[in-house]
Amino acid sequence: MTEKNSTSSITPIASENAAAAELIQSINASQISDAIKAVGCAVTAIEQDGVVRLHSASHGVGFQVLWGNEVSPGQYADLTLSCPLRVQGGILPEGVLSSWHRSKRFARVAQHGDFVVLEMDMIAAGGVSPAHLVLTMHLWTQMMGQFFLHLRNYSASDEALQAAAADREATAALPATSKPVAAEMAE
Image 1 (cartoon, rainbow, N blue to C red):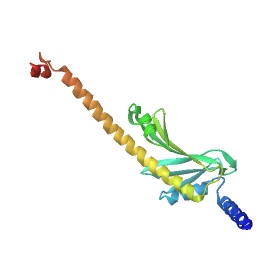
Image 2 (image 1 turned 180 degrees about the vertical axis):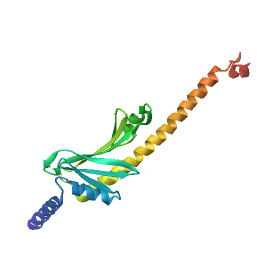
Image 3 (image 1 turned 60 degrees about the vertical axis):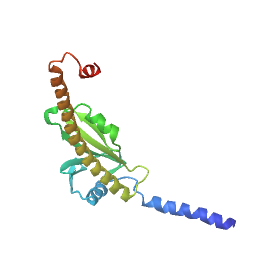
Image 4 (image 1 turned 90 degrees about the vertical axis):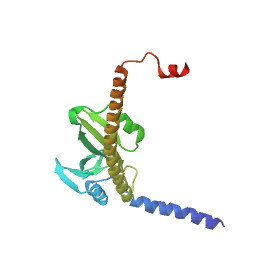
């Protein structure tokens, strides 16, 4: 009975070691390019100053891969997926960024001058599977779509709120009756 228990405790350790051997400890342009293609997006690799830069698009809008901590030449522990968008007129409706952060996880938004940047980090440090890279890329494309929808819906609801406020102001400017309706009914 003791031997059976000792054998069963060895097997999971052996399978954990086999699984750990399949994990990616750092990421490179080829692996990320494959993950981008796996979710149905085209990718362009441009070498600049000895570093491969990846550019792609989802929902008709471009994004780029910004490499993080370099582990060895061409291998990175992490990266940031970045989608910069120019704000028309340079003015973003107040509250649109905080509304995104209250309602969404995984991707963050920041404003830099006339640009709004949607970003999401991908970390390989500690080990991830190739499937995790594809899943994270899929999540990124979903976050991009949800952010574009958020901007469109926020603009529409913001305009509706402004129209309602204008109606209230117009109603307040009308001449007041001598008695409120509720007061007339009470008499």
